[in-house]
Image (cartoon, rainbow, N blue to C red; front, side, top):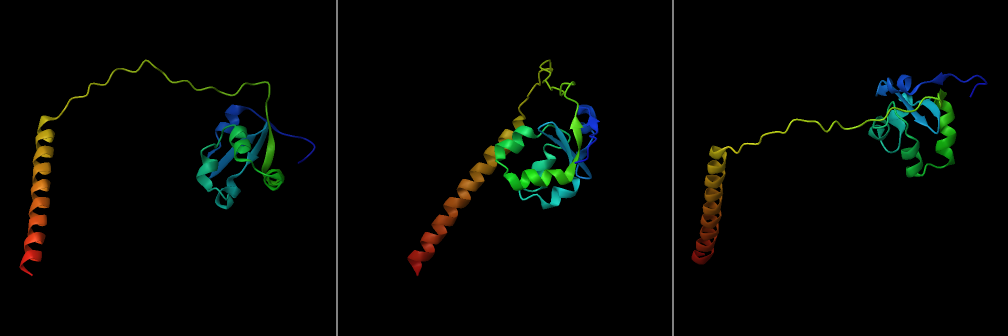
Amino acid sequence: MGSESKVFTYSEVSAHNTSEDCWVIINGKVYNVTSYLNDHPGGDEVILGQAGKDASEEFEDVGHGSAARLMLDEYYVGEVDPSIKPPTYTLNATLAPIEITKDKSSNSTNKLLYIILVLAIIGLSMGIHIFNFSS
């Protein structure tokens, strides 16, 4: 790591959220891990799920050892601005209700298919029984 550290906002880091440009924040430091995606032992999807976000909790929960922590130095690009709070996401609960209607023709078709399946099983078992009896 150099003596001067570039400072990024959460918004700037969040723009780097693809497999072609993947940054993560771990313990206040920003890492460009794009070139590491294919080498990650847990698979690239684990990192891509945290792309552009603060992955500190996930990184710590997995229990990465000292080797993984040393490896981070190679991907270091700067620090996240601690004076700006990370974005929070809330679910908008004012969604319109969805009307669910039952398709009666589908229900009749399902019943017919069920009856045919039962009759086929009975016919097959009777055929096997008759075949074994005549042999």
